[in-house]
Amino acid sequence: MKISTEIGERLEIARSNGSLGKAYRRLGKYLKAMDYSKKGLQISIEIGNRSGIAINNRILGNIYLSLENYQEAKYHYEKALQISTDVGDRSEIATKMAIWAMLIMD
Image 1 (cartoon, rainbow, N blue to C red):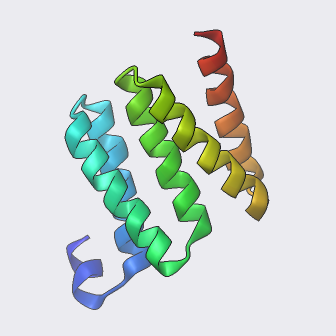
Image 2 (cartoon, one colour):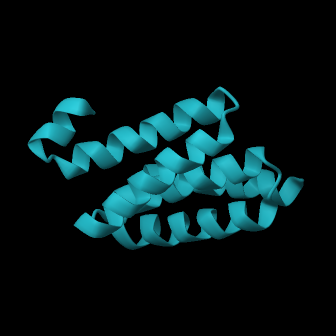
């Protein structure tokens, strides 16, 4: 991420932040995970990367799900699903539908 920051490659910075968010969530460090994911989301919004917006919303949904904050998780999953549907990202749609099913079952 350091090199991407130095050369101003915002798409890679957004992706790196999202990846760090996923990693910190898996480690149970939810506040750090949320911070990185929100940075990734903000950069994705600023550069108009709709797939990145969807992915970072999914990551945030996963974090909120881990925290058992189901309303926030649902909010982020819905946003992610809508964007993925709009851009036709079938892989992300399938991922979000599987997560959605888990939410319904709880």
